[in-house]
View 1 (cartoon, rainbow, N blue to C red):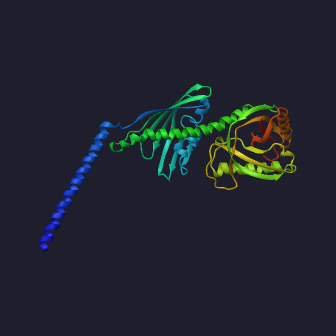
View 2 (view 1 turned 30 degrees about the horizontal axis):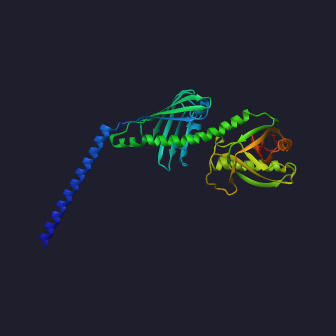
View 3 (view 1 turned 45 degrees about the horizontal axis):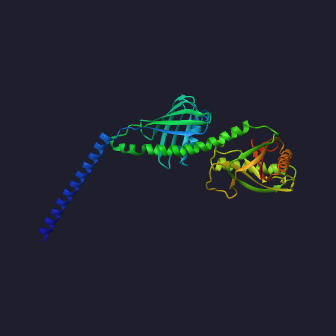
Length: 362
């Protein structure tokens, strides 16, 4: 009986060893076939081109690319992770500027250099990812298609990969294209707020009554009721503006060029009331989860407005508002809220610089 068991165990051992040898041979054949196919049919590096158009002047678009501080605020490669940490090195703008980054949550790190700059025409970046000694080289070309339209062309050359890693080249272009698509949305939002601010400041004609069509806006802010005695209202506005600004920039991490001028919405003629209710908010590009219940989103519908620009002490705005209301009545127009857009940050004991917008309709 013992002899039979011994023979059986030996037979089982021989079968097992043969099985593992067969499996090992199959694995080696698969690896060999994979390596051969990668070597003969897949390039060790990849070149591709991606083109996009954006409705902003070339000089404003270029300034978002040649300043790495601007670049990292909208490029999805950096904004997609909340844990990425970036160090900037002088010069912070133009040829020779560079950054290093680390993302402990996603276990990635790298360095990026701006190697060449031809203003408003061409840039060259080098990106070293993790331990790869060969960089990804990205040439970006800019072409003005019209005064308010720019064509952006990315020409990408990926680093050489070993035979076993060349499979990555199958999805590199798709991954890069997806990143650019998301980045272009962010860039549009950044430039939209920045250009809107520039255009509004450039268009100011004080004490002139004008007509303007205003598009829909999304505002993040606070609903408030407060006293209208003496300077109490304006002091309350300054206090609440500081709350919103600090929450937006510190808690939410938004930069100055990511949001518009603060807007106060209230009844057109409540400047005469003893108590005033208003909503004060900052325009943002999209909704997201809020961590503080004191703040809320409000959508400002598209409207036709009678507008005036006013500069002076806050109480003096009442005269300009009266002119807007009188104009609406004269034109037999009904009117709604008055919107006070602060073109300069409201500060205590300081004059205001604002656009007054009275929404009107038949």
